Length: 212
Image (tube, rainbow, N blue to C red; front, side, top):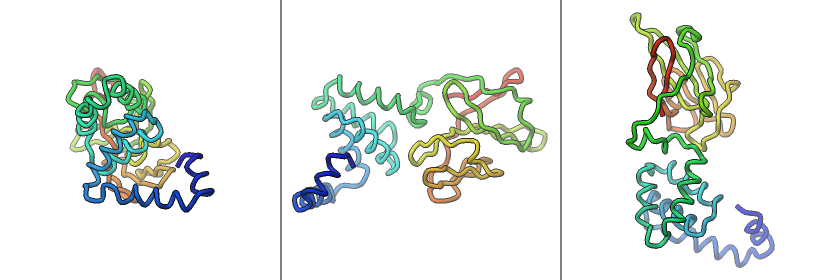
């Protein structure tokens, strides 16, 4: 809540109670995803960055796909105009959300050099910064074959960038809301139900690469 709204709630509770009751009642016949997408569009229309970020994250948590968000923005072109759609996409790009990376949306994506494969022994886990992105890398050997898994370091809950100190053995716990993950699989094991984002990876000439 903004400071202004907080002030009004404290100083004019009788008026603001009706206002929030009205907002709560609006859209009660819509499914959460549709309601979230409408909220996203209204924030873009008013160019309220804080609200746009908030409702975009809510829409993603409620099951909206990035493609649905982009479709909603483009379908609202007659009301928004191109300038406001570009404004919204600029914010999405600045948020650097894993779901909106080109490779996730059908584009080819780019391969990035992560580290020397020899730097991580089988069974090991490490955190690496690569081209502005935090990564957790897990290496294991199955039947003499090396298997590499590269996960985005941001929690899928509210995109908190999880530090290396949050790793205890093979359990990674987000410091913000205690979502926990198994870094061997990326699966969420506590609090939430969304796994870490896993990037495609490969080893070329002794170098581990990941694509996003």
